[in-house]
Amino acid sequence: VQVTEVLAIDVGGTSIKAARVRESGQLLSRRSVPTPVAAGPDAVVRAIAELAGALLADGVVGVGLVVPGVVDAARGVVEYATNVGWRDVPLAAVVGASVGVPVVLGKDVHAAALAERALGPARGVADCLIVAVGTGISAVAVSGGTPVRGARGLAGEVGHVSVDPHGELCPCGQRGCAERYASGAAIARRYAARAGVTRSASEVAAVIAADEHAAAVWAEAADALGAVLAACTLAFDPELIVLTGGVACAGAALRDPVAAALAARLTWRPAPAVCVSPLAADAGLHGAALLARLTWAATT
Ligand SMILES: [Zn+2]
Image 1 (tube, rainbow, N blue to C red):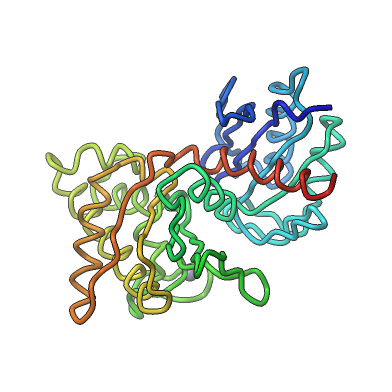
Image 2 (cartoon, helix red, strand yellow; image 1 turned 90 degrees about the vertical axis):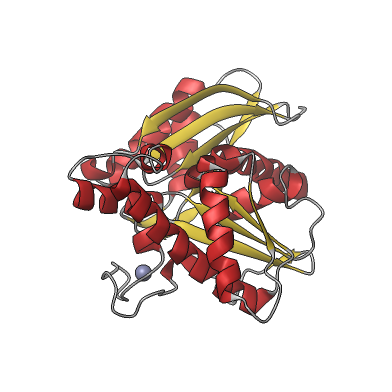
């Protein structure tokens, strides 16, 4: 059977996105539902299975499913996902049993990095940093053409680099984690606390020219991200930094202040180029599809 279409599912802390993906990379029948985090971890699993069932069509040979958090890809188990409340959930088996086709499980930022390296601005760049800024923040450093995974596969959790030792308390136990300022969830939360009005991160981005609260929250986010990217640059010396994920949909409104905050910290060496990916919010979906195809190609 020729692999024509796979079903890609990208589980985020805010929404679950899904689409059928052709071998050409074309996305079909896209759909998105809110992640029912408040209803509990089991409700999120059910929402994924329902979405998969609704989009499954003839010719779909399997599912590429990517999630935030710590994933044991070989066993298909989510060991830990803070934003969704999962601990040791055999997600690949549960969703696979529900839809009746094989499911490949992966970590969202690894999938996004696959997509950025195959289809996005990181293509052909041997030393780069791919940073996914969504509900949370995580990254993949690519060094000499190889993604850095680390001893436990935990490399790249740069959202928990502290940028202010006296800053906001983070659920991880530290203070001042970049994720408390620059993630989509943080931007929305900090804006609501300051302005008394609820806006999503993309809505905040759209009004920065006219709303002083939006401008202040956005500037703090960009500065926190710049501080993390400076630390990553000092550690890995990338040629290019690719910003992807939902918050990167803001485009130059994110790139420009982040690049300035980065350059301001690197006075003795040139700063790497910073770009926002045109894939942005779809990087996870493209990556989930690529991950599934690569896994099946390796095992058949
Ligand atoms: Zn933290």
